[in-house]
Image (tube, rainbow, N blue to C red; front, side, top):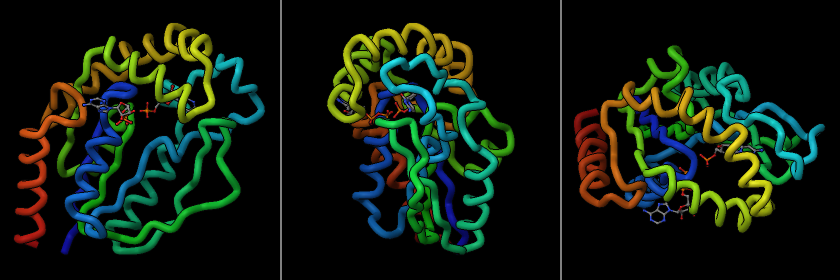
Length: 204
Ligand SMILES: Nc1ncnc2c1ncn2[C@@H]1O[C@H](COP(=O)(O)OP(=O)(O)O)[C@@H](O)[C@H]1O
Ligand SMILES: Nc1ccn([C@@H]2O[C@H](COP(=O)(O)O)[C@@H](O)[C@H]2O)c(=O)n1
């Protein structure tokens, strides 16, 4: 069976992880998930509190490594993916094994920006959620899960997240096959994607 590669893009806190988790819950071991965020370059030499680093520019990621590892998974070979910490801006010494699976999901804000990566996807999904909703979600998520303060999220959003979204993320929406409104819990859209995956599993 050849793997079906699904790309899930969208702005920060749009609901990409939520959608990927829904698909994982539906298909369990048949799904492997890779986040582009695992492939951030190590920036631990900067202090997190400063947040002057631009994490939203396409050059912040080691995308070549992601492409190489995706090609291995397609060849049914296990990979050792990087592990990244948002708390320390650090790629950790450890790696995590990812087994090949018939459905491979890649999610990230910028995955449709890179021509070579984009061409690997059989299905490209863009989760489209209004900027104000995303910002509210990001504030609570980053404070709760990524060790940030309200002021650091605000500063980072205005200096890099918002301008990079407008320059790189939003234009990549038009590379998608499907644009899903209202974030990651759009049941009708989720059901359509689940049907597409079931068809692939049945036919291959
Ligand atoms: N449809 C939704 N309604 C309410 N909250 C949501 C919805 N989708 C996602 N969230 C919440 O918003 C935050 C960001 O969602 P997440 O899926 O992690 O976004 P992304 O992966 O795009 O950054 C999380 O705390 C998540 O629980
Ligand atoms: N050390 C880091 C690395 C990334 N970010 C931010 O994460 C966002 C992407 O992740 P989503 O789950 O929100 O899609 C991106 O907008 C980066 O600004 C960070 O804050 N710190």
